Length: 176
Picture (cartoon, rainbow, N blue to C red):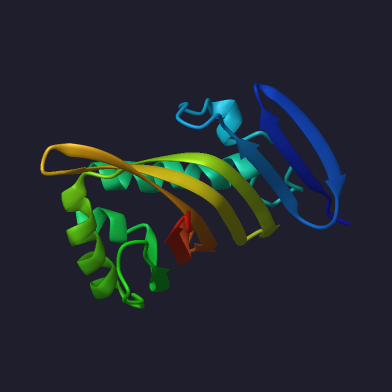
C-alpha cells in the first residue's frame, strides 16, 4: 500500500501527516515572500520505489516558469503534451492543441510574467501521473507598470517518452 505524506510548511516549520494513497506534499509561504526550496517542496523521498518524488514533480513548475522567462512561446508550449488542455487565466478560450497554446503564450508573454508559488499540493498518483494544485502569484509588466495577479492553478502531468509533460493546466484568477 502506498502512503500519502502531507506536509504543511508554515513559518519555516514543517508538520507532517500520513494517510491515503500516493505521495502528497503541501507547502505554504508568507504572502509576498519568495518561497525557499524547502517551502516549495516540503517532502523529499516520500515516493515509493519507481515513483517520482514530490520534489521532482514540484520542480516541473520551476522548469515551466523558466520557459516563461525565455519569452519564447514555443519553449513554453514544449512543456505541454500535444493533446494537452489549457484553461488559461486571461483568456476565455480553451486551448486544446499546440497552436492554441502557442497563441495564448504569445500574448501572455508580452506581459513578462514571473510566477511564484504561494501554496502547492503535489499528489503523485502513480509512476507516470502527478498533480500539482495550489495558488501562485504572477508579476506582470504592462506599459512599464508592474502588477501582481494571484490565481489558483492545477497542473496535471504525465510521463511520456521519458519526459514529464503537462496534459492539463487550469489557472483562474482569485475571485476576491
